[in-house]
Amino acid sequence: MRKKIIAGNWKMNKTLSEARELCSEIQAGLSGGIPENTISILCVPGLYLLPVKELIGQTPSLFVGAQNSAAFTDGAFTGETSATQLAAASIPYVIIGHSERRSLFGETDEVIKTKIDLALEAGITPIFCCGEPKEIREAGTHESLVKTQVEGALLHLDAASIKKVVIAYEPVWAIGTGLTASSQQAQDMHAFIRSLLLKVYGKETADSISILYGGSVKASNAKELFDMPDVDGGLVGGASLQAAEFLRIIQCA
Image (cartoon, rainbow, N blue to C red):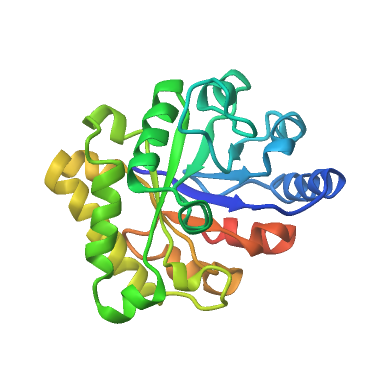
């Protein structure tokens, strides 16, 4: 049975003191337990990875994740952090291929593929993001674009490696806009992504991979989204910066 995953992407938000306060509030809220077969991941700014990791400690089913890693192992790449360095710091998860990295920093499918490979080689679980902008959705070519993204970054992997990947479908038109894909739109795309995995790896492997929905996930829409058969949780943006809201989303898993 594949895991339900609720991952919070804090992006470039919070000071260190605010980050510690938010983590403490989330920890306290989880003291009563978390839904069975569910984990939560706090993907925090790089500066806060170690303080947050230390703070959340051994809290059951709560982990820390990075928001990005480099397409290089080491060398003269000022400002970058490699998957090897993250692994040495015992950071278990990393977001790769987020639409903001694609659009603002020019990351291509080839760069994202390299980052996926390096994360897996380092023993880190990549949370691979894919999704279409508004004009692609309106043109009806969203499946074609997502297929290109998935094929370009993932489908070269062997079955053992692909099972270690988490996929997050994020319709770009729903990120930070207040718009949300309907539960059926989310289900349709998640089922399509799983069908791509099925064709290459077979049913057992395809059914084992968690596919998250990201795009203005809130407590008010989380349960309807997570109840869809191929939606295995969420990659949560703004709502993950509010402890009470994030905790309600976790309980919807």
